[in-house]
Length: 399
Ligand code: PSV
Ligand code: MN
Image 1 (cartoon, rainbow, N blue to C red):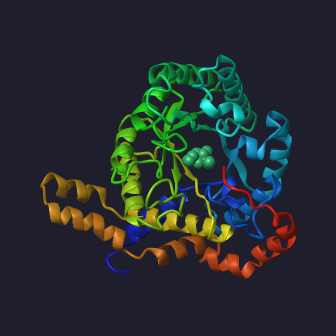
Image 2: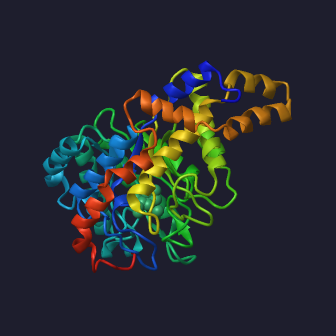
Image 3: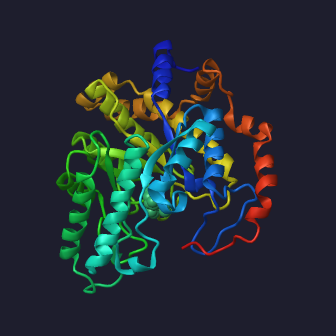
């Protein structure tokens, strides 16, 4: 391959060895937009089916060993469902990953969950957070990944300041309940469903909440949760600098929180984010502890294919980022040789590393092309036949 040395190849192989992508259970189910869902015969209709699908993606890619769970959607019985989850883990060869409390769906959360002006509702929300922490503990100290829909739609209708206090109170309580080593990830989002103010609206707010909660709290960056034109890699660089980055929710977008598949619109942005992560590992001599999670909604693409494609894209772009020669880049940056520095950076992005990623898979006994392997496996046909009747008549508007 043009300009790729054997040390580059080794760097790519060890980078890929260290890259694990967590898949969202909800990415296999019938999700869509708020205007409706287009039901797929093979969509997962139960937690068992989600585990089966995630296990299949992992078997095909070797890079997706965990599945993120959303408590209400996947474990409506809370801690009572733990044995069932453990069974599914061993049946399907994938472990439960981050535990996502659901503080946005119930009717009582109309004016917020942990920041609701009603103390009883706040207490109810905190109890759910604490139960989520317990679930995480029981499953092996899994991360708790918190996203709050809390906010308001109209100026003056809610106290931004009091809601800061209430949110902090709840997050501090959740942090105090964590097991040693268990992490709490705080996700931010500037808008939707709240359209005037969101209580955790950006990375500064998430960072401050995390810091005040305690050392096991980190920030989660969902790539879709930014204003247009925001420099996401700079946010990533800052969070890494502060040792405050805990994880990602990967997806792509053209307009807002579109939840499209990773790298489908702007693969260069994914590359720039991965470059910051690679730089951090280079600078510190060890990879940061980051949960690389996917948060996508596949309304039109076939769900299994979309997931396999996402993992493959993540691997390909990560491999390109691993090609950047950090020492050389730093040298060029110090000399302010702008064009040469940019060419080195951009040049890595334009390398076709797919043959090397294929070779990496082959060396590990995996299918060289996991998408092709999925197609020829007959898995999608099988699940479509098995689940068709369960999926018919499930068209409902997306909440
Ligand atoms: C909200 O838009 C979000 O990104 C949060 O992470 C939720 O948990 C997820 O999507 C699924 O609704
Ligand atoms: Mn998210």
